[in-house]
View 1 (cartoon, one colour):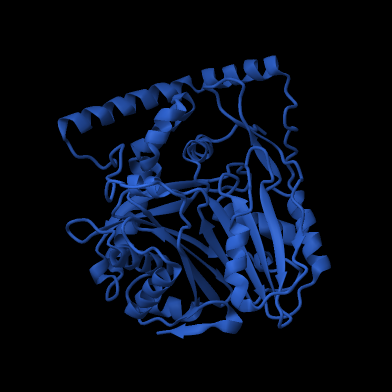
View 2: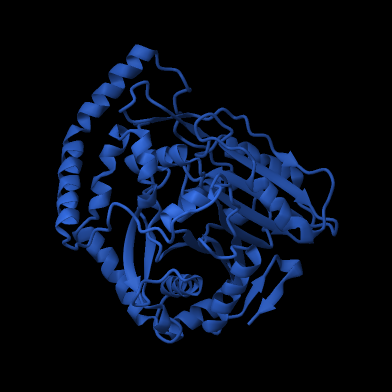
Amino acid sequence: MSNVLGLFDQAFFTGERVTGATGLLQCVWVYDRAIDLDGLRRFHHHLQQGRLSRRIERSPLPFARYRWVAGGGQTDLEIVETPRPREEFDAWLREQASTPLDAEHGPEWHLAVLPFTDGGAGVSLLISHCLTDGVGLCAALADAAHGRHDPINWPAAGSRPRWRAIREDARQTARDMPAIGRAVAAAARMARRSVSGRSGSTAPLTSTPASAFVGVDEPITMPTAMTFVDADAWDARARSLGGTSNSLLTGVAARLAERAGRVAADGSVTVGMPVNERTADDTRANAVANVDFTVDPAVATTDLRQIRSATKQAIIGREENPDERWVLLPLVPLIPQRLLKRMAGVAAGSATGVVASNISEVPQGVYRPDGTEADSFVVKSNCPGMTKSLMHRTGGMMAVCSGRMGRQLFVSVVAYQPGASNSDADLQRNLAGVLSDFSLTGSVGWPSTMRKTA
């Protein structure tokens, strides 16, 4: 089994290093009763032996591919000794989101539990997106819940002597030369189209910023919001509008983008959708392909057929005409980091876009971290290290994620719009308003303190 990083994974990792902004996934479980700490300790132990127990090791060659190595096992289970009211749970989750993680040096992830004063408990698992995507994370959580360990034994960090590492990595670069050649040719084609002003299906190499940044740069906390919806009601509404659960999520994302002003001159929204490509023996952290398509958010609340058709055509088009930007990935190890930093806007997308990611039904073991079923579960995104200037340069961002745990479906959002108020409360109000647009009822907050939104 090769331990060479996939090109997209290396691009993801390198992008974080040059910008200083880290993409994190945060899994959250809520129990309305006391949690079984011994069961949670077993879950933690199995996570340490599972597919998340690895790190990224750089090559001694500045232009070569990075590799997977064994994790350091440094992360301890954090058990908060003093219970806190449920009303403080969101604040605690933000505290957890600031936990220092490092996909290269460790710790790679962090598991913590907070007892509530009313006898329940909340659990947080924070992990770098460089190590896994949502689908891969859920698979790893299910493995840990069932006591399954990773069948792959990754080499220890630093186990290769320097000259052996140089020799092996140089050979890998030589094997990559045909792909590098194709990437150079694709870059030349894209440059010619850009100079001549011809339009194509491929997005431009730079994104249009929402506004020029003026003032003192400073770190920002990205606003987040979430809601829980009855899964049967969600599916019924999707069917009544001529769509599917996935197209309803896309419609919700598009309407959220519209409310935030992330629309083109014609009122359309560009939706970026990760398409799962993970196979049974896949070792990639992010085993996805991205498709982009344009939708009209104005009609989404009355008819999802246009969105459903656009999604289908985008996926078919990806298979027939792969996005040239993905062909450029072999160039990532060769590009100087100062240039990669200037190209950060490519990964962030456009100022008129939104990402809609559907994890779908999560395996049952995912919501049983202590061996018993949690009362609620959600996957959230966090972006520590993000700054105002980076958000202005990339035109802001908005990402919507959804998944379902039995009869409960969650929708979580992370977003930032240059020039807007950018508060959790405003984003939560927008999310509640979009649900109302679709005649859906959601719940703001965690189960025992839920406030209904119409």
